[in-house]
Image (tube, rainbow, N blue to C red; front, side):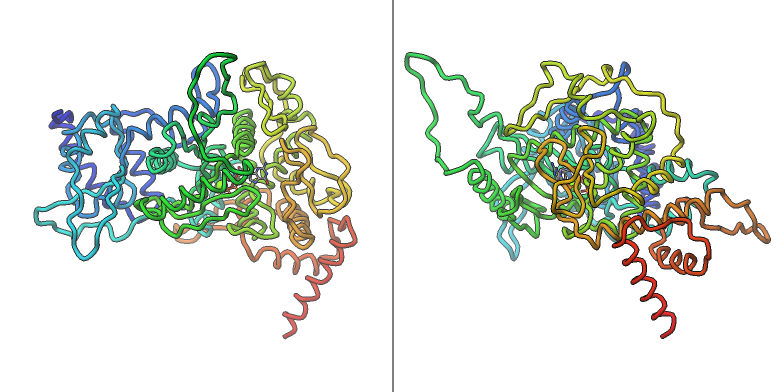
Length: 576
Ligand code: GTP
Ligand code: MG
């Protein structure tokens, strides 16, 4: 196949790339640059992954995933660190087929061909690396390197690969302070953090590359992203949760003939489904470790409630968790996606609360006794169900709206809920984001965690089973608590921070008038930006100590005690 890019396209592209090169240092600039690539190619895509909508309504997550998986299978990931001339790079690749879309990501390029056949012809033209000091594992994948045997001027090379990470918190705080209202601050925060179109494509491509490693053993398998990569609440730099779907070959739904001859596969038997899952993940983990280009730091965590293989995919920089037999998590992902699509305030509030929680150390990227992002998201959903009128419906209501095609029972758990968005009638709640954020803090500042459980299935508090400090009913495995790991100290911190943030935001609700000397505007932190300062808690304590009138009475004795001990520590520090 010959080159399909017109000469004018090529030269315009070359000058355009020069411009892009100049901007590869800052993340924001890269995103802008990538958006320009997109505009240049006349592909009409937004930067907002979850806003993938059809004309007559919303697309289900299932449809979005199918489309993205198909795109990923036509794509390659190419390291182009020895290339200085992007025009030549594109011309070379266009020899193998029409390029549908491409974008640069640090020193890597994601190139999507119009047809899957182009990948096969590209492989024919791809060489095995020459053997130097090391011997190569002869595994061919769609992770390639573009070599340039001509003399290369490396002066203009980007110095390091960029991770798709969130805007640094200090920059975000400054940006938010310049907004005019709390509603604008919340919208701006979401825009700064949400996954870009490019990050989403890369996530599906990584799944597709890994599927190529698994496919020789399980040709009918798929590897699908789940969790925040696809539920609409993903933040740039979030981990990549992957689900190895072997259901097509499980034999669970197979119908056996009643009489006559038939053949069946001989397969190894194991004592339980859990052992099968562990063995599959263990075997695949070994293959990824030994053969998977770019897969590093692999750990098999097979004794966990949900066994997984954890590793870093170096070219994308994603921290990956591969699970199998985890269909309930897929259903939770679908449910969260649906809630996020129902009303834009859902995503805005979740992003803001997640960001606030991260800045205040309520959530952490490592496992521990703290509240997880998933639990926090469920808490936001519950709060939105408790508004008057409710902003989102209960899971029971979504189940009642389901049709026969939606029926889903996984390991005896009823995971049925409606997939047709048009059946869902929302009530007319007109609360602003500012009101909702303030009310969120007040709601959980005075929530009776000691006696009540959070339940999005029913959309109202339930009596709590004895035991765990924080009880959030798992939406589908209803006997389980999604926040079982959370201890009293961490819950106490969350409550105290809700109390303080509620107070703080009430004091700083209005944007300060823009002032400045000699044309230099001064930035005053206010509204949401104030909530993101990690040191703010201690500062609030100081203010509360000196204030005679305290607005919030601690609801429980243990919160009272905790605040007292924190104040005492503060005083001690001030005295020393
Ligand atoms: P971040 O990775 O922190 O951005 O959020 P996440 O939503 O992806 O959370 P995480 O990676 O911890 O988990 C991935 C997905 O697994 C979640 O979105 C849920 O769908 C599911 N999940 C996580 N924890 C639980 C749990 O305790 N119970 C259930 N049922 N599902 C869970
Ligand atoms: Mg995740």
